[in-house]
Image 1 (cartoon, rainbow, N blue to C red):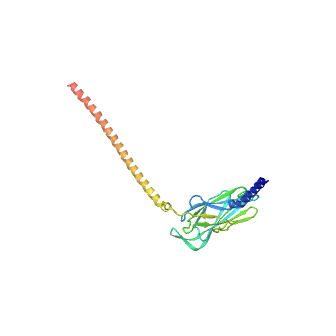
Image 2 (cartoon, rainbow, N blue to C red):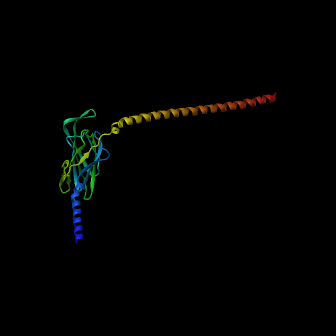
Image 3 (cartoon, one colour):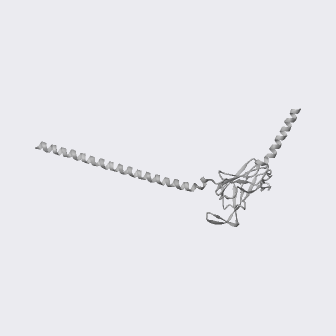
Length: 245
């Protein structure tokens, strides 16, 4: 009896853990495809799972942070989805690459042309974004997920330090520190190009020298043949003169 009760209690506890932990695996999230370094550009994927058994996800809205606006946001074409990029005027213009930017992307919306994300599936929505802020460790987005039955789930709650994860957490993109390699990437490419140019010039010089040597050898060969023929002819003539004498 004790063993049965222990087993039953264990099963209940396990199922409780599964139920409580399920939302953590099902919320809308964002992850970079590679590094997302401060001051640089990155490709990020918004991962959207379908949490319903009887409805499909037909629309996703991602709102961008206004405290760290991004001037460049480019979506990747996706079959079965129509994408719309919304820009808004900035209260304070940004300066990027020596130019002032007066507007930035504030929202990207994907709308399904067909069935959307059906039950039991998830979808990734990729974006190329930048330049990432240099004075922030993370970017917090607000996502709104709409289902085919008109239900709307708002993934907009920020994660507070030291607190449990909220029921509908907002997607958070963690930024990495810019490395020296990234700062010197352009200079490195220039040096590589210079080295390649030098190597190409050396190859051209070597090829020219080789061609010149081949030409000289051919000329000397022809001259040698002509001299040889002339020598033979002279010998024949001289032999005939001695015979006639």
